[in-house]
Length: 338
Ligand code: WQD
Image (cartoon, rainbow, N blue to C red; front, side, top):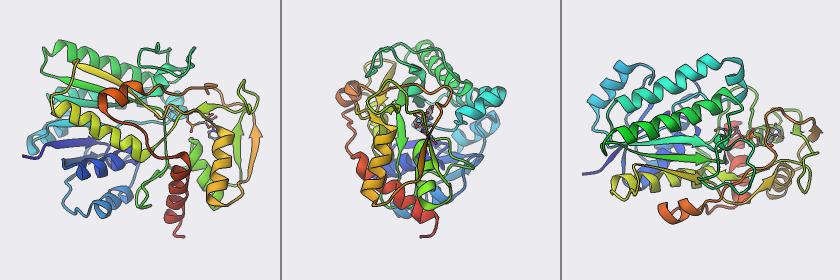
C-alpha cells in the first residue's frame, strides 16, 4: 500500500515543490494549509505539474488541536513534513508573540497527533554568524538573532526531546535549509512573497520585471572578495528532492538515530554581487541596483558542508545557480502574465 505523507503548509513555496516530488516518487500526499501566507496559485500549479486533480487539500490551522485530530482521523498518515509557520525575520522582531504562539503551538500539535515520523523544516539561521565555514551539523548553534530564528531552534529542541522520551515510537529528521531560491522549471509554481520581498532573489526578479524600482545591495564593505555577503543558495527543486530522500529514510526504517539532523545546501558560497551578475548574464538583461548600507542582523558568510546529507540521505544538489536563476526569471514572467 502506498505510504501517505502530510505536508503541512503545503500550499506555500517549499511545500508545493515538495508535494510535486513526493507524488513523483510514488507517495500519496495530503496538503493542509491555513492560507494565511499564500493563495491557491501554487496548489493549482502542483495539480497541473503532477496531472493529479485528486490531491486532498484541507484548509486548517495547526494551532487548532481539534482540527489536527480530525485531520489525522480522516487520513492514514505515515509521516508529516511540517512547513506551516510564519517566516518573516523582520516581522518576527516586531511581533514576537505572534511568531512564538503560531510556530511553536502548531508544531507541538503535530507532535501531539502521535504520528510516528516527523520531518521538521529547520534553517541555517540556527547557526547565526558561524565562527568557521563551511558549517557542519556539529557546528554550534548560536543564540538566535530573531524570534523567527529562535522558534526554529526551540522546535529543533522540542523534536529532539520528544523523540528521546518516545521510547522509539517517534522518529524525527531536522533539515536545515540554507537559502532556498528559484522555481519549478515548468514556471507553474514558485515564490509568491506578499508585499515587499525580504529575500534577495524575489527582489531581483521583481526589479527585473519592473515591479520594484531598484535593488539595494545591503553592504559592499564586508570582509569578502567583492565586499558583499556570502550565502549557500540551494535550488528549490533540489531542496524538495532532499525531503523525499529524508522521508524514504524514515519510512524504509533506515534511520540510525531517533532524531537526525542534515544540512541541505550546495556547499558552494556565492556572493550577492555574483548572484546579481549571474542573473543578468543568464537572462540577458541589465538589473538596476545600487549599494546600500548593511542590513542589521545579516551574517557575513555562511555555507554548508553537505557531506552528511550526501552520504546518509544519498541526496546531492544538482542544479546550477544559472539554471536556478533562469527558472526564477521564467516564474516572475509567468506571474506577470508575460
Ligand atoms: C541574502 C543576502 C542580504 C535582499 C533569510 C532568513 C533565513 C531563510 C532564508 C527562512 C543577504 C542580501 C537581500 C535585498 C540584499 N528564511 N539582500 N538586498 O537573510 O540569508 O536568510 O532567508 O528560513 O532564515 O534569515 O536571505 O535573501 O534575505 O538575504 O542585498 O533586497 O542578500 O543582505 O546578504 P538571508 P536573504
